[in-house]
Image (cartoon, rainbow, N blue to C red; front, side, top):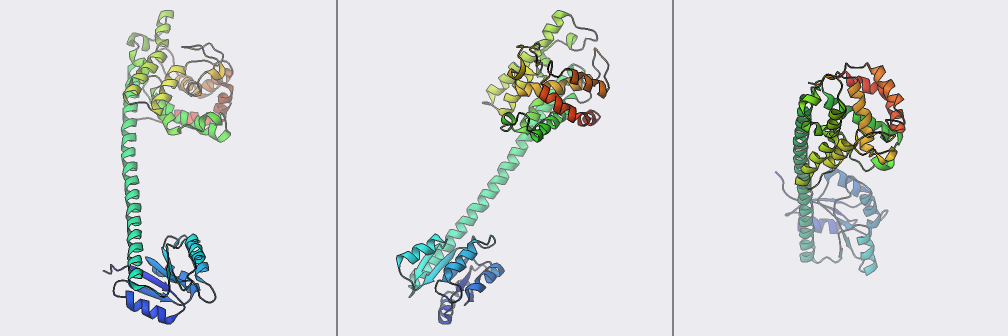
Length: 358
């Protein structure tokens, strides 16, 4: 296995090529060319570790060769050292400005030439190692982040499933809710609806946070959650508390993890998804755009799935009935702009509603 570094020498003087090949050939694998125009072809062919490039050459000089090298993505990273008889400082500045890593004057000082070649090759090795380290680090971070996200999703879905089980909402309400939310958010992005607000949102987090919108129902008595008939006024006031209880529960979790965008969205959604556009909702009676956008989105999604699902107190409506009820709630119960989007993708909601969640 050849572990020698490869150097390409570009110089129109044959004696210089011979001399440098003899001088460096025992330590490095040497390739040579007398033509600047041939340098790029050879570089792409052998991908040298370093190029020694003369400046004064016929047809195309070293400066132009270097410009062509830097314009080629395949070879632009390869370090180039100018070797030249030009000894004025401006020529050196010009060469370094074009991207050369060094500028060595002729006649060559052999010990200095050797040491600088050694130094630049060592620097390239360090750069490659740093690059590889960064790539490996990114991979490790990505892998670790993926595991954390999977754990986070597992915890959220388990909590959500427990809530569903407690009030007999079997059949995948939470999973469907995530898909409804994603569909509506995608349409908002496509149409530019509330673009200034959602541009800073992480859609994935919003979708995940939706799973906790009813978490406050954990603290509502079973006798109320599963009651088959109409709730009394007192019972209704109790169940309305699930919005506040949900916000409080999520808030307690958030304090222990030193803040989280996901939990922040979840708390807003849990607290505000029963507010109504006309101000007749709960818990605060907010009106119009005073209602957080997360809550306005969830309001449509939650009502649609509740309508098309069996509940202890009612039988499921068919899709068309649910759509019509939401249409009629435009501007009273629901945000008009969001109802219009819902209307456009009502078929998508229907298809999601038919997904069997295991």
